[in-house]
Structure formats: C-alpha cells, structure tokens
Image (cartoon, rainbow, N blue to C red):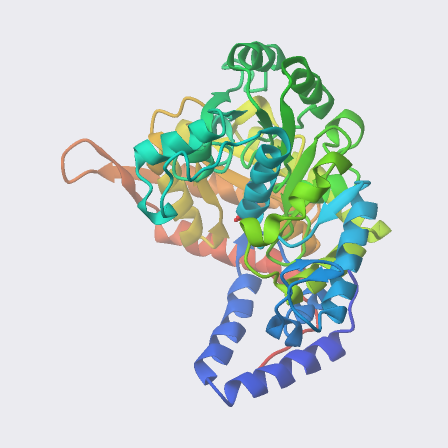
Length: 482
Ligand SMILES: *Cc1c(COP(=O)(O)O)cnc(C)c1O
C-alpha cells in the first residue's frame, strides 16, 4: 500500500469494532467482513474506484457523525461546534496547500453536490435573478417543464457548455437526467472524430457561437490530458466562467502528474472534485475557487447541501494530509505509468483504444474488434474475476446501454502495489477473455447484444491467474479478520 500502516494495530481496531457491531446486528458485521474478502479477490479496474488507507477509513467511524454543524468555520447555526471547526479548518487548509488553491470548501457530500454548489455560486455571483416567486415558481416538487423554463428565464436563460456525454463528459455537466440540465440551456463540445482528441478550435468556435455563462471542462471517460490554460483563454474570450470538474483525476493533480497547463486549479474560476476516486480519500466532494467566488461557495450549506458530514470532513483532512506526502506523488505517477503499460499491453495484443492510448489513469477499449458489445465484454470479464464497466465510445453504434467499449482504470490496483508487469499481465488476461467471448443468437432473431458465450475453462483459468497476481499484491497487507 502507498501509506505504510501498523497492521497489528489495524487488525486489532477492526477486530474489536466488528465485535461491537456483531453484538447488535451480526449480519452487518458479516457483510463488512465479506466485502473485504470480495474486494481482495477481484481485479478491480473500475476507473472511479480506489482503496482508501486504514487511517482514512477509521477516521469516519466516530462521534463527529453525531454533530450538526450547518454554516462555516466560526459561523455555525448550532452550538458546540468547536471540534468540527478544528477539523473543517484543517481539511480546508490541507486542500488549499495540496492544490495551491486560494480557497477550499470541504463540505460537499459528493461530486454532484460539489457541482451544484459551484453552479449556484456562479449564478449568485454573476446573475441578478428577479425574484423567483414573481416568476411563478411554486414548490420545487411541483415543477413541470414550463416551470423549469420559467426558472431558467428567471436567471436570464443562462447557458452551460460542457463536454459531450458521448465522448466522456459527465451527467452533471448539463444533461437532462441531472438538475444541471434543467437549470441551464445546454450545449456540448465533442472530440475530433479522427483522433478522438478535444479539438480546441472547435470548442472555441462553439463557445463563440453559444456564448455560455459557464464553460465546463472535466470528464469521466476521456483518456487524455486537457489543456486548461487553453480552456481558460476560451472562457475569457467569450466572458464565461470556467468550472473544471476534476472528480476523476484529482489524484493526478495532487500527485503532480498534471502540472503547468494541465493543472486546472490556477486556470479555473472554480474547480470541483470528488475525494474518493484517484485521490484515495473518503466518499465525498470538495470545491476550490478563486477568491471572488468564496463567499458564494461558502453558502453551499444550507443553499443546496444538508448539514456537513463532519466525520467525513475529518477523513478528508487525513486523506489530504496523506496526499501531500512524497509517497502519494510516487503513487500518482505510478497510476499514470501503469495506465500506459495497460494501454500498450492491450494494443500490442490487437486491442483498439479510443485516442490510441492514454495520458491519465484510464484506458477506453473499443471491444467491437472482438465482435462483442461493451455489455458482453463487461459480463464475460466479471465471470473471469475482472471488474470493469462498459462505456460508450465516440459515435457508439450500440448506444449508451449496450455500448461498444469498456473503461479500465489503474488507481485501485496501483494502490495494491501493481506495477507495469502486473498491468501487462492484466491486459493479457483481458484480451484472452474477450477473444474467447462470442455473442449468441437473440431470441428475437439476429445476434444478441447482451447474451454471450464464454467457455468455462477460460473463465476458470483467468480467475486463477488473477488470483495469483492479487495474492502477490495483497489489499491491506497484514490485516486479518476472522
Ligand atoms: C464521479 C463524478 C461525479 C460525481 O461524483 P459523485 O460523488 O458520485 O456524486 C461528478 N463529476 C465527474 C466528472 C465524475 O466523474
């Protein structure tokens, strides 16, 4: 593991904690124990997942959970928040130092919340909204499409330009199933159909035509670096506010893999993130901002957030402290090197990669060359002990449900100690499984996009091979639960 820990102390802590839980509801203690066993025994390549350190995990299980602390440090709506003030101030200080940001807000409960805080802050800072009541807005639960239109108009019909979902953008960047798609009139930019890369001239042209209030950068399935200096230039040219959502790659920013023009923090007006993906912290979110937005971001609770999860903020402080160590920088560089090893391992065995490779922590494999859909690939790999998720590729003929790709990420297995050799071996196992997988006839005729055939000996052989590499790189080494 990246952060060394005292395995005897951690074993004692969890053994005792599980005894306490078992005395109330043994099935919960059983599920916690089983979850560790399951995580230990699977080759986890989900790009958004990771393993937090025992220190981060243990920090969440305490009485900070019992405290209400709406407001900000030193300005709470509840009494007795002195210790919450200590941990929130610490978490924010570590976040500012870690990312070189003038301001940090560590209350968001998740990445979606962090974006919502950012959106309201831009509206509050930059738009004088006529009274919403006058605009006819009733109870928010009763809002229909007309009401949303009215609400948008109340803010002057503001626009958001973000990366298209089809090429790796995120639902919270203006798409309909998320409230961002209802708050803003939305347009998106794609990638070059030849190279799969962001075409900054095309983004600039789109921004000039669309004139957004918010230019959004960031992604969850784009395997390349983004030039945030250029994104800021574009935002400035059209008078937009640049929000960068670094939910996926915050660990690479913290670990100084993304520096200069590729570090979003100095260029974005507001940077949002999750804390549990490549950053290896507790499940949660955070917002970094330039000083002009600070007073608005600070109002995130109670504007769009409930009372802060103080126990999670405490764990964020621990995780940010860990991310400031040289070991974390090594970890982050290994995540990126390992992604290259995985990409090369797939390519040299005939795999087709979106953009031809990777510059971050993830690889997008187009599985259509194996004659199967992303859904079939995902299922066949799970049968073989390899956990990934299906993902659409640009101009995907199979749509967002079946898809033609799988997304593979290196943060979790790198945290277990995997290096280039292990990722090359992982690539070999993936290609073996996908090569052996074939679609079967659909009951309606034609070929199924979901059903598939994978010889059971291939699945069994792969599971055994995966277990071998996993056992050589144990998760939480020395932690034994019985
Ligand atoms: C994961 C992700 C989020 C959402 O994070 P949650 O904590 O699940 O709400 C937001 N934006 C991007 C780009 C993400 O990848």
